[in-house]
Image (cartoon, rainbow, N blue to C red; front, side, top):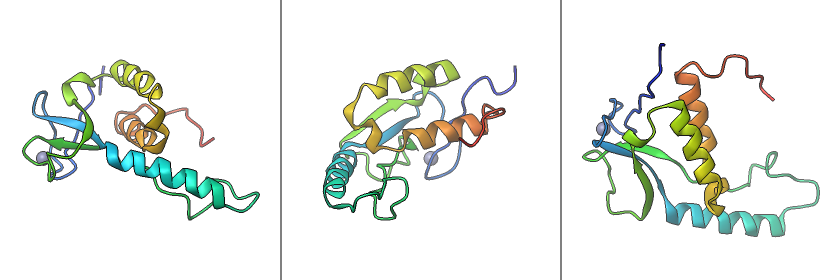
Length: 130
Ligand SMILES: [Zn+2]
């Protein structure tokens, strides 16, 4: 079966990341800040303006993939896990279910990461835009 194994690419050097050599990561402080900004936004936005249509809606905290040696800020307080733990579509599904239990997941762009993985590995065929 082609594309069975998920290939992770480093956000810095663009090369594939091998098991135990890097991780998928998201800065917790950023997710917390986005949550606060969105709560504030919801309190001030005019009636009828939705998060989807507003330019001012705070952008999601960003998931990234780094080689251990490429990470520009290895000391950040982050939610991270080794790329070796998310090598199959099933693992990605399990991680998604796990992360959906986290209050802060909606403040991150995990959906973008999963969409990118699916598109790269041929999983979006048959998926309509809505
Ligand atoms: Zn790298």
